[in-house]
Image (tube, rainbow, N blue to C red):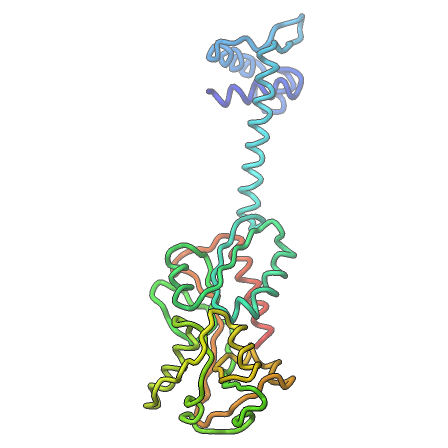
Length: 298
């Protein structure tokens, strides 16, 4: 179908005649009349009849007007969506995150983002480090927010936000609570950790390897970060974890820190994207807000 002809036909109906339509479209009146007659011939349908100097819609013209109005309203909706998408007002952001940022940082950050960008849909997947980077590189996520050691990964753009200390924690009644001990004493304790693929678990194992110690015994394993903390609070085992997660529990006496001589590891929180790619406008706005929020935590 000749959409230009349909648009001229719709303009005549909308503005009430050829003269006004020509003025609004900045086209000569003869050109409008000629093009609409050509459009009628192409369709094989008479759309207007003349009553004196006035054009009146035929029954077919009336029905076609309804279709044209719906089509051009949809066209306007598409144009509005494209404009909103370009400005980051609409869109879909798929975000993957490791357990630390997903549980303790992203809820507040995303809530503030949604207050300003209500029509942007955000889908968050929480997983371990290995899977987070896999999802990012498989195009299952546009952004990955990571908490762990400052690693690098091929094909990933790494934007460090801030870092904090890694702590060993136990129940306040544990013999090591608040004390300074040697690393070999600490890793002889049963540990409650996340599953394999967790960056924190891998750092603990690496720490033992570096110091020629046997790997710690993982007495309990959970897929969630909160579960590992709750088990230590209940009175069993030890945990090696970001201070960001347990600082409040330590301050309020629900957990106790163990000071290990010579061990001063830090945990990095970073936002990661695929190297060399430009984020969607909405995702750019989200990353900007995350950077602003993270800057307040330094």
